[in-house]
Image (cartoon, rainbow, N blue to C red; front, side, top):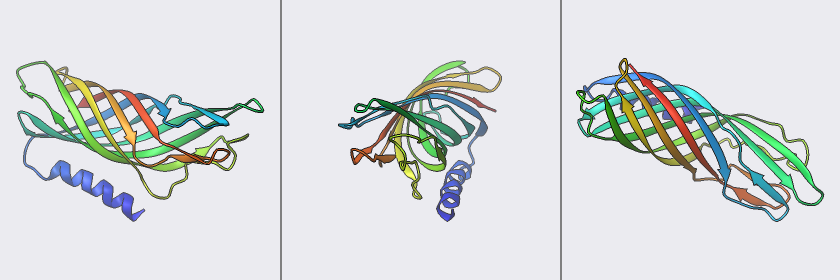
Length: 199
């Protein structure tokens, strides 16, 4: 818990440390999770991972801004056992924190601008459930954060204050869980379509 509070404080602190323009608003992400392992006995099939939360963006200069985001996310994992044939599902809920640099020519006179994103983050398990068959005993249950890195491209649109539409990729650096039957670690690759409003 102390680590979570410290990480949240760092993200918020970074957003407020400069005297430049500051914006914040809601964020909605529709993602898909894919796992980078194929067990001998169990196949992993990704699933939808929607998320919602808030983001804060700090304008640094005309080419760079700093963005901190806190989200509540859902992740679905569908699995298939080959012999005997059996399906299972694991559902997780997470609190995600990230901080990213946003790179573009942030010209306020231009209503539509492309930009790039690169950042780091961490995810903390809140709920892990649904394992009923061959995945019984397996869970998203790490007491430590799942660290991740990510990149993305987006489009800033000057409606109201600002609306962003971005496509993002996140790579989790530590295994999300271990497949019990195969004793194989599964790392997560996550792809997302994100809509952000800044005011």
